[in-house]
Image 1 (cartoon, rainbow, N blue to C red):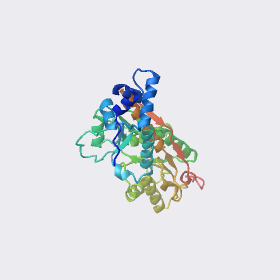
Image 2 (cartoon, rainbow, N blue to C red):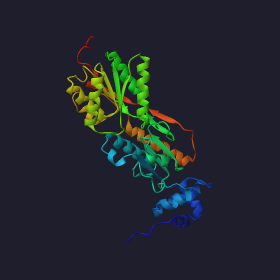
Image 3 (cartoon, one colour):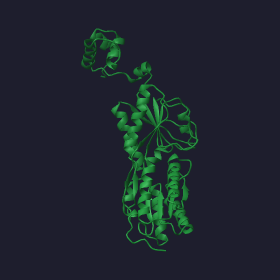
Image 4 (cartoon, helix red, strand yellow):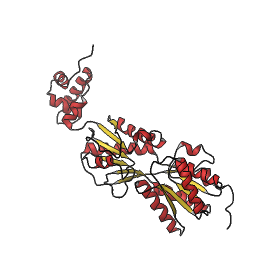
Length: 341
């Protein structure tokens, strides 16, 4: 038979206090003697009392539940980055006894209701994601994992230091003799893409080098489409000696395009990716990538969001930047001298 649930009134009766005093004692609030508080805690343990989360939510306004939104959440579980990011969010929610809900994500269709949660994490905010816009206007506390694109409503952000990692790659390539760099990454729909392109062009201007760029749709995973794009770029700009790309799919397309044109990746043309994944260390040559520490990123998003919920305040918009690490591999180590002329 199912055991009848122990209620707060049962605990209060056992400790010889009122239900309101018992509630305050168990939540660590209220004014009472330590002896009274300890008596309530002992009674709760003896009765194996477990708070009713729904009732507690009605009293406090906090459900102890947050949501995670991504423009294509289901598809993204194939990504090492997103799986690690979600794991980090779970690290943060479990430590504070919060539940995590993965929101349905159809970017072109409005939601029919505001999710019943205390707050939301938006991973990789995208400008044309209708549901991300709705969540930002919902009145719920929101934290973004990565930068917002221009013109999108904003909130506190936790992001990797993409600019520093990109400059580290570019400085290394310059020392290796690269003088015709090119960048291929997301368009203005992605704040990450905007930041990378701006940093790349600023670096090229500082070093008085041409800044060649091409745009790829955010989350375009087609290697064939990127092979065609990189082939066109290399034919139009045959002196290109460094390719900096934003994703594994573009990196694989670059390798195919270079080989088809008879150019050696890592020797004739250096290649680096502004992301990281297992594929980059499994291909030949292995491809330099940037570890954005997605698990730490997810953890910090959850921790910040829970603080905003529990402190019940509206802080000034701010950005928390986490260091990113360049994973150096064969594609940025020349195996032959730089050719003259």
